[in-house]
Amino acid sequence: MAAGRLRLVGCATIVALALLSRPAGAEVSGEPGSCAPPCRTGFFCQAGKCISLCNPPCPDGQRCVEGDCQPIPRVGKPDRDNFLALLGVFHGGLNNPAQNMGELRVEFAGRYTSFEIGPAFGNQLIALRSAIQGHVPFQPFKGHPFFVIPTIKVGYTFGWIDDGKDTHKQDLFITPGVRLRYDIIPRMALLLDPFQLQITFLRLRSEQGVNVHRTNEIPVSWNLALGLAFLY
Image 1: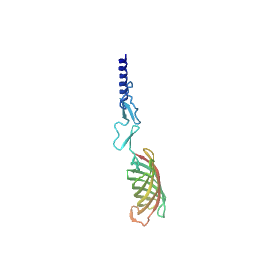
Image 2: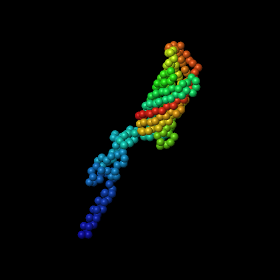
Image 3: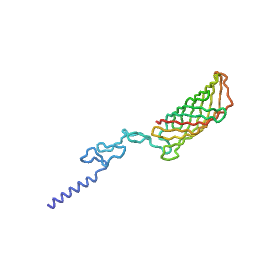
Image 4: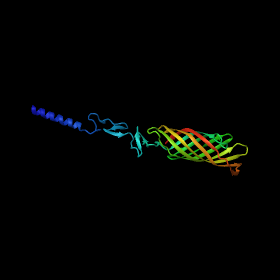
C-alpha cells in the first residue's frame, strides 16, 4: 500500500511539473485553438499561435494599427507628407498698386515642396495664379498633431482687366510666410495660413496683346488662407 501511494504521488508531481513548464502561447489541452496567455491587441489566435491582424506584415516604416498598416510616427514630423488641399484665400492690398482679391486654390504637396493653382477675382479683374512653395514643418508640442510650417513661394499671375481696352497684366511675385497645420484625423488636416506677405517684383502690362511693357508698380499684399488637406 505504501509503495502504491508513493508511485501515485510521484506521477502527480510529474504531471504538475509538466503543466507548469508549458511555453507561453501554447495550445491549452481541452480548448483547441486557444492561446495562453491571450493575444495582445493587434493579434488574433489561430491554432494556438498569436497572428498579426496585418497579413502580410507591414512594410518597413509602417506599423499595424487595428488591421491597417499605418506610417510609424516620426518625431517632430507629420505622419503623412503628401496631400491634396482645397483653400479659400483673401488677398488684402497693403499699398496703392495692390488691390483686395478673393481666390480659390488647389494645392498638391509633398514632403518639402508644393504646387498651387487657382482663379482669383477682384474689382474689374480676373486672374489665374500659380506658385511653387517650399516648406519645412516642425512640431512645437511633442505628442500633439499640430505643426508650424515656415514657407516661401515664387509664383506667376496672369490677369484680365475689364477696362474696355483688353488690358492684361502679368506678375512675378515672392511670398514668405508661415502655415499652421492640425491633423484632425489620420487622413485629413486643417490648414491655416495666417500670414503670407506677397511682394510683386515684376509687373508687365499690355493692351490687346501688344505693347507689352514693364511698370514701376510694386504691389504688396497680405494673404490669409484657410482650407482642408486630404492626406495620402
